[in-house]
Length: 467
Image (cartoon, rainbow, N blue to C red; front, side, top):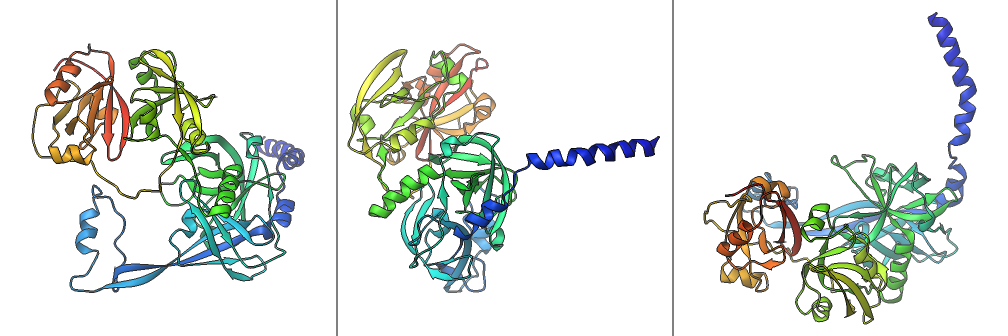
């Protein structure tokens, strides 16, 4: 009986195999035609101040358990800091036969020397024309001519489930081809507000960064930029910058070495169902304004924290991540109309779009203090801000979170946060904060406007009971 079943199984697979093979894509022609336009990029950087014979002090957050270890033992006492060189590898691709190359900004950022290696083994020292950290795109130039170049496609025509392929140098293994499908489009990632990423399951590893993502026509539709990983290696989630976004950036870098983007000067966040309920909204469409910078275009136009932006320059905002991309693509100096929802009423404001300031690497932290108090009905222990602390956060009023437990902790509020408002009512003192919270019936959800570092966000917290 078993032999008979095995024979039937073998018969099925023998006849099914050709059918399976027909459905699988063939990337051989793609590689043969486009592989020569993909390059390897190696960089050298001089780092100052490392201890002799020691590994450099890593960038470990202060709240990490290993912070104190590295702080105490990362340098040997009495030794003079020494300079050392670091090297890294990445990928890129040629977009014009006269030597212009696209790659990721993080591949060449802060590099002292960039070497481009072609598939014919020739090597060139590359000039960095420009770097745009916000989209993670960089434009390089090598002194060469008659180079093979890639064909460019339209990422807007990509469909979820479509086959795509990557060529790059994972772990330095040159001209490696990997393939997969488009998993999602328009994916927004934390701290990456200007790129609607293409998510794929193409195997991407260190060294693939900056390499091209191809469709089945052999056209570049994206630049492989990031992976989601808990191990440092590929785990099935890869993200690529759409090529139309990258080409717009490169044209500005080529023209002036920098990218000019529109800017409003607001902090925004997604509208959850809980936040929509707390604001009396019927749906979750729009971008919630969590904060407005002083003297910004938004403040001058009259935008306020708690406004929900529904349209910008006539373009609907379905999710909050739509807004930065639309604003960023707007030419600075233009007057545009912003349609918003404020306390249940729709308003239209005219905003003169500014130009986004240069990157600011200052990482100010929320103030902290030692005083103790009883937690309120949300599970929050708070205290008043000191004058220096208020000055540090531009004179804002609020209360400092000393401890969070219960409903507040479950909602994500933590020690060091500054609570600025409750349901759009500004918080002045711990006593007033307690009254505002106490006035909310049990079972209802309130929206706390929280300042964390330099960012503000609304956090919905359900009131469970009296305190």
